[in-house]
Image 1 (cartoon, helix red, strand yellow):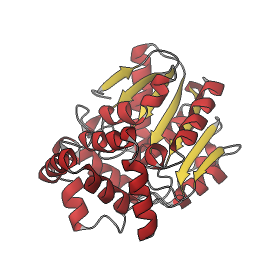
Image 2 (tube, one colour):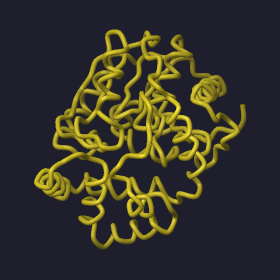
Image 3 (cartoon, one colour):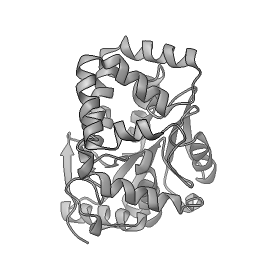
Image 4 (tube, helix red, strand yellow):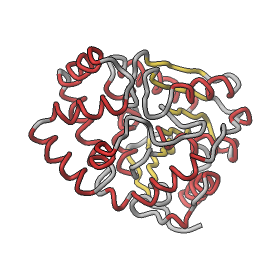
Length: 282
C-alpha cells in the first residue's frame, strides 16, 4: 500500500498503537510508555499523512487499518492487542472489525466513534497556538519558561470544567513533576505541525462524515476509557462505544478532560486498569 513509518518500543507481547492528531509514532511512544514499562512491546506507527508516512498509503479509515495489518505481515507478527487514543480511535475500531483473527483485544482512550468536528473551545487563538509551526514553537518556548501557563491553556481547551475545577486541576498537575513533563513533551509530538498537517486535515475530513462507526461488529474484548468532561471528543463517543460493543468493559474518569488518562487525579488507576486488561488478553 506504500511506506509506513514505525518504531518499536519495549520488549514483550506486541501492542499496535494508533496515535491522535496531530501526532505520529513519537506521540504513541509517549502516550503509551506505561505499557512498555509494564512489559509490552509497542508498535508505534505514523498514520498516513503524519511524519514519514505519506497520505497515499491510506486515506480512509479501512485503508489505515489494512496498512497496519500489512506491517504486521512484514514484521512476522500474527496477533496483537491494539490501543488507540483520540483520533486513533477509528483505526483501532476498524482494525478489530476487519482483522479480528489478528486482534487479541482493544483499548480505546477518549476515542472518536461518532461524527467529529473541531470543538467549540478550539477557537482561533487555540488553533494558532496548537495547529501551526510558529504557534507550537512559541508554546514550546513558553513551556520551558512558564510551564503553568501552558498546562492552564491545554486544560481550559480540552475540558468542560468550571473555573474552580480548572484551577484545582492545574494545581494538581503542577504538583506532579511527571505530569508537567508529560504535558510539555506532548507538544513536542505535535511539532512541527507542517509534517502532521496533511494527516490532521484528512482525519477531520474523514471523521466529519462518520455518523456512528459500526461497533456492533466488533467481537474481540474491548476496554473503553473516557473522561466525562472531555471537550475535544465528547463523552458520548465513549458511551456509544461501550454500549455498542458486546461485552465491552469501561472506565469513566469523572470530570476527566481529554488528557484524563495521563494527568487527572485518577490517571494511575486508569492506567493500571488498562495494563491489567492487556495482560489478561495478551
